[in-house]
Image (tube, rainbow over all chains, first blue to last red; front, side, top):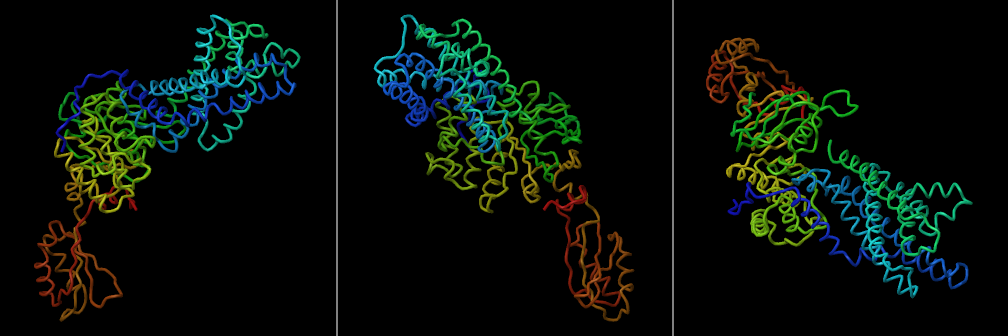
Length: 267
Length: 331
């Protein structure tokens, strides 16, 4: 039938398979890039516009509020985009389209397929966060920044995107497909508003219960970390604590998500 | 069946395989053993819930067995699932094509997951698209194709990395007769090229037509394993001649019944009650080919003073074997 054989003795390593499935996701993301951008920047854009520009101009928010808000919105874009890029697609690929099967049958460990999902979603989250900078400059005229913050900000943003992606891995594999709509509604909004994105966490001492709730949201440490690096004049949790807490929650979320993924992928 | 570990002629080897799902009261697969020879088409036949999908799931590394051993092309699927996935191909029952990619890209990306070099995968994709009648719309999205075309795409995709063993899950479910025939022809061709094909089906005709050997499974147990012909041959007593007899001089059925029963080739004779027809009806159970006995039976009836006016030959089918073994009909 075929003259060209694929060659059973071809050189091969699981890394090649990993890179191949990564290339597939990057190809699909790249092809839909304008739609992807529109989808991820709309929410932070409006938040920035209404809270950073409109409320400030109307005098309801102090001009310094931008220093609180902007780093928080960068964190929000990273975490939320990472989360959305993993959670819903995973639910769909595992239950409705079964699309993921071809990758689960590829010659690489099943866990590597999960890690690839996290990596791609984190890339998307990082891009979404990066796009906030030109938007902020354009919308606000200037954004909070300190010299030498670039490396720390970059690392924290990537960690934030990874945290979001790992959260998506947990939700996308543990929630049953028929409850996904409800779960999304119940998870996304609290995630959005308890992550210290719109307020500095240390200032919450008078609303103790909300401070405790916020401390449980890993996004808080990303917001606070970025705030400390970009606008150190705003009260913030110490940067090293933010890094420890963020990386710690990343490890835990990834481990839990991995368990969920293996449970879904293997009978 | 005893299978030697190192036998290069064995493509699939299953030994004492058990799968019990958590909280399930019984085993889905209850300790089955069989071997598939290299280059054969092996039919896995059973009703829904018999355990065939679970067995194939284990062989394709997607389900972890509770106990037992399974190898595909010499690779232990539990110890080295990644290595096993290199040598096996899967054509699922349900469409799981990548909807974000075109038909041709589905083939190309699948090959890249399996490390097929770029130049090879392009040539091979174009060849397979042509062979499977998909060359006219290589850039179409899977959603825009018919069920038969989808299935052809999935077979083509599975062949992209040139698997040693191809697993086809219920290949003709939901296909029209032409699409079904096309699939059957492809399977025959794959066999001719030396690919081992394992087919699960609950379609008797499909199993009988395609398979070199058939395993019948129910309640997680292997009930029979042989060539379709041997399985059918094993159903002695199910070869029949249904005779309609008109009385001429004979006064009652017993006058015909006795002499028929006396024939050496006849196992037993049953009188059938049929108020719809005038005359007597007999079902004659025979050992050998019923067609060769028609003349003899006609002679015996004539000698008994009656006349054979109609005869129908009954040959057992795989379905009879199945019902005999499992006690239930498939559809």
